[in-house]
Image (cartoon, rainbow, N blue to C red; front, side):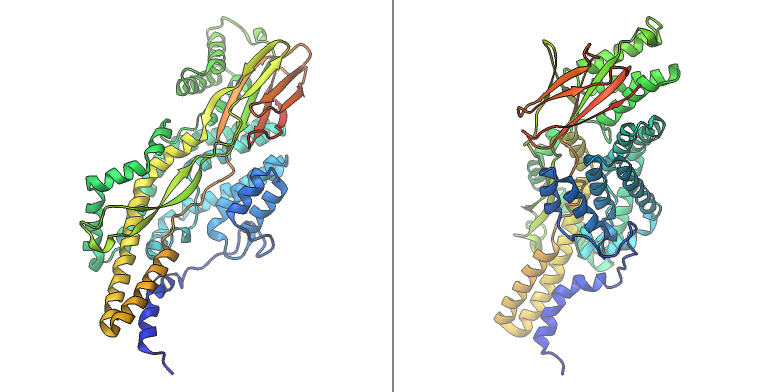
Length: 495
């Protein structure tokens, strides 16, 4: 027995999206396992991370990483799991996970040319349906953390390779970004058939209207304030590059590289980069042979990783598009934005005897993230408006058809179906590496005579650290996530 016509007609609204996913197949999970582990949400992972329960955080990430159908999110969850292992002191396991993340990134990039069909299919659905390939700043931080892990294990040569990869990823990001935008535009054009091309052109024209641009500028005012760095530059990655080649350089070429990197960091943090300026001056004296390596006193660097970076959130924004595109009147667009996390230790005090030093900013990850957000968001907004618009036209057409056939009752039911469909499918893609810190800071000082120093966080936690009295150069690496947390401390030698 066939269902009544009215149910067939109403059902076409939600099925519009479902039919496009029928052929989307998931490969076997690359991290192994097909179902074991906790299938929990990102919110639960964040709660565990903020509570510094890194074992549970890793279990949650690994559970989401290996569950059935998780292929598209493996890079996202792989990064979360890798950093949880690092925070738990499992440096080699963290490296192994980061290596697998790098493999997945390479696989994704190699297949980028064939992603257009999947991009097109997702036009009527959710951007989350696409494989997550990681933001460029995330890829850079994968290399940075691998380098730090290697230093923690005493493998300086492997750290050199990782820091060079971080440098290359910053250098190559501009070209890769342009290619990615071109692929996304091709996907949009492919998804827009001849019948809908006119509607798409109307939406693109409306998007350029000064009223719409004004509304978007207001929505993203804070992003503009935060985005202070140059495109795809990560000052912490540049700082580590300089620090490494200053202490592990084998010739003048390495020292020149170190001087260039550290000078860039000093310029990016003008006004609060005294410690970096001291290193630049030191290297320049080495290069001009004013001093030799034997003249350099044993040095301690305190690196402070604090807080949690800005979260991606969805704001349902009403844009003044109805004057040009009536079908978009009173429709909210699910646009991503950034929400800063301000529960963090603003600084770290280092005390040796009667001398006190305060760490200085090296890198605001919020600013790094905001800059890439600023670069990618115009494409996201354009795509979102096209996507929501295409759904609005399709559901509006179906609603009118049902209303014409079944009168007021049909129109009311169709309207309810339209709202439900839009609510279910109009969602921003909020995937990201949520465990990254808010800031990196540093300080430098001569090795104390008693090889001890005292650290005090802005939240009032105090710790005494015993140093390696025989090391020519060493790092005290300190991390807190929330203000008032007990600091997590590790030390490793650079030289």
